[in-house]
Length: 199
Image 1 (tube, one colour):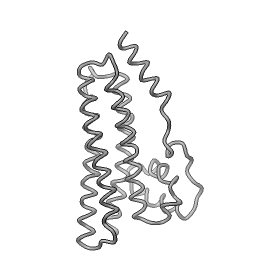
Image 2: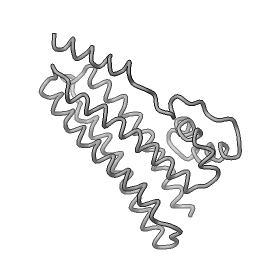
Image 3: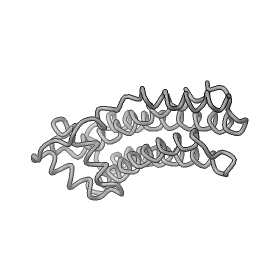
Image 4: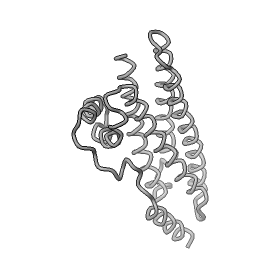
């Protein structure tokens, strides 16, 4: 009975899951800005997702490499915050196995760290001003370190659900969200690396 309630609850959450602006908006028509985004995204591991998630912000990105990086980080942060909220709701479900509850709790902590690191990355980018030379490298090194650590948080969360005993809707739901978050964050990191190398 408890497992039935849990399954229904997951389905209920899925029904009321509201797609983000990124997911629900079609890629903008071709323009100098979108062409710039497409060219930049070619350096990422998931270029199609990269273009889809950033093209909606083409008007603000224009052809500004720094604005592109800031937007990519912001997209990752928004996705991380959404995932954190989702995991928080799972902790309140009844009928969870002890190992499921422990894994969800650990995952929530990882997501909290994830949100903090991405937030610090955006703040660092905004505070660096027109830094050049060693100062620029120092700021970008901090950003790359935090974004890389955020990626580790994603994989650590998924690893917590390893093993057949944790197979089921909880594991599938979390894995799907973490995979998407990890891909978006991976793209952001690639754009950060490219920006650091080029400028």
